View 1 (cartoon, rainbow, N blue to C red):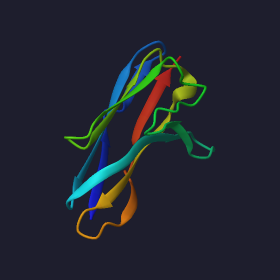
View 2 (cartoon, helix red, strand yellow):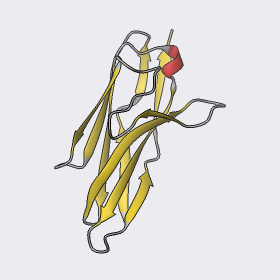
View 3 (cartoon, rainbow, N blue to C red):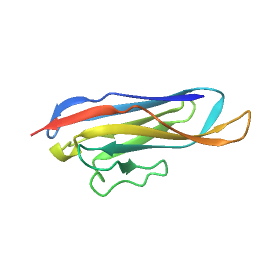
Length: 117
């Protein structure tokens, strides 16, 4: 079993910055991919940035993902935040369980980001 936990959300004014963190822990595993998604009220969950560095057009140039595979973490630096960035941000980790060689996908519970105008 693998747990994925996000942290770092909060309330910030437009133009401000936040740094979200995602940490995976649990059974012996290796991370195959880890990315960030978000879901605004009344909208579907959408990709923010994939593990390979593919960014949503709406965040390009403002958000940056950084991974530390040794620590099983992935941070999301968010700069020049806009009210439309308000959402619950989720981390998704695709991991290989070393004992079985099987791949599983795990989601965190999310962290709220609110950007005021």
